Amino acid sequence: MASNQVLWFEVVGKDGKKLRDFYSKLFGWKIQQDTTSGFDYGMVQGTGGGVGGGIGTSPDGSAGFATFYVEVNDLDEALAKAEKLGGKTVMPATAIPGMDLKFAYFSDPEGHVIGLSKGMAAAAK
Image (cartoon, rainbow, N blue to C red; front, top):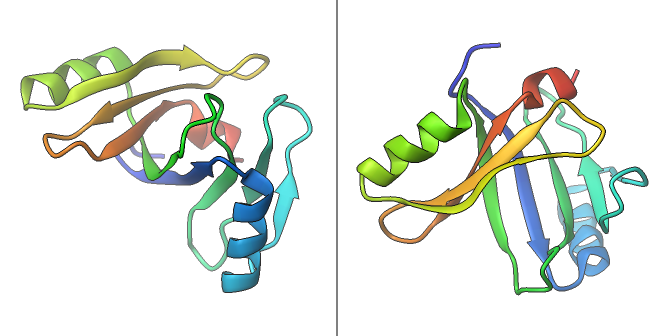
C-alpha cells in the first residue's frame, strides 16, 4: 500500500461503550469488541471501500477526540516535518505491544489532532 493514505479513523472519549452504541445505531456499523489490547475499544470494519476504525474510551480519561490516521514511512520524520510547518507533536512514536505497529499524534496549526501510523496497512490485512 502506498504511503500517505488515510487508513483508519478513531473516536475516543469518556465512555467508549456509549460511543460505540451511538455510532452503531446511527450508521448501522458492526463493532467488534477488542479483547487483546487491554483497552475499552471496539473495531469497526471498513466496508464498500471505506476505511476501518475504532471507537473506545480515552486511555487518559479525557473528553477524547475524533481523528484519522495517515500511514507514513517514517513517524519521526513526519512529526519533524509537521513541526517545521507549524504543527506540534502531541505523542511521539509509540509501539502497540504484540504487534508490528507504531503510531503517533500531532496537532496542526489550529490544534486539530491527526494520527500517524507505521505498519497499520499490514495489520489491517
